[in-house]
Length: 331
Image (cartoon, rainbow, N blue to C red; front, side, top):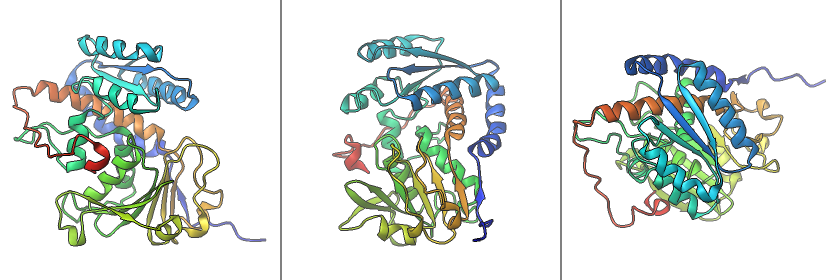
C-alpha cells in the first residue's frame, strides 16, 4: 500500500481570515459606529448567493451592518445611483457577473469611488496597473485594491511567501507564479499586483500565456506584459513555486504531474481546480479563499470611510497616458 503524503500543509481560508480580523477590529474602533455595506444581487448564480450569505454573516459577527438588495438587472443602474446618493450607505458591492459583457464594466464605473469597496472604479484600477499606491501626493489616502486579488496577496503574506527582508514593493522578487485565469475582475489584476510586487507571473487562459514582470532586476517601476507564443500550462507550471487557479466550472483541473515539487497551491474558484492528489506535490495547499475575501472587503470599507475623512487632503492628479482607459492594454 502506498504511503499517504504528510509533507503538505493544508491552510484553510478561515485561519488566514482570523489573522486579519484584529486589524479590522482596530480600524472599526476608530469609526465609533457600525458602517453599512449594501450588496446588490441581480443574478441567479449559486456561488454569488453563497458569497452574499457569507458576507452577511461575517459582517454582522464583526460589528458591521450588511444589507442585501436583490434587484432586476435592468434596474440595477438606477439602484446604484440611488445608493450613491444615500448618506446612510457607506459601501457598495455588486455580485458579478450581471450581463457578463462590457455592460458589467460600465456598471463598475457607476458605483461612487467613495463607496466602491471592490476597488473596481477607473481611478483605483488605473492606480493598480500603474503601481501607484496612494490617492494623494501626501501619501495619506491609500488606493483601494480589488478584494479577491488582495485576498490572495494577504494569503501569500500569511504563508511567508512575501520576503519581509526585502523592501516594501519588492518582496516577491525571485518568485515565479502561475495564475490560471485572466478575467478583468480577478485574474489580470492579480497578475499585475504580484508582478508589481516583484514576481515573474505567468498569466494563463484559453487564449495562451502572458508573462507579467518588472523586468530583469526589477528595473521597471511597474510591470510589463510579454506574450509567450506557443506556451501552455506544461511550460510554466514546472518552473512556478506558486500556482494560483480560479477557473469556473468543474471540468478544469491543474495537472498535479506538472507541478513543481513543493509548490504553494491556492484555489480561488468556487470549484476545485486542483486534482485530488495535489497534496502529493504541493508543500502548502489553500483550497478556498472566500472568507479571506470578505475580511478584505470589510478592511476596504474601513479604508474608504477613513479616506472620506481625509478629504482635507487634495487628491493627486491621475497622470493618465494614451490608452490607459482600456484596462486590457494598460496592463
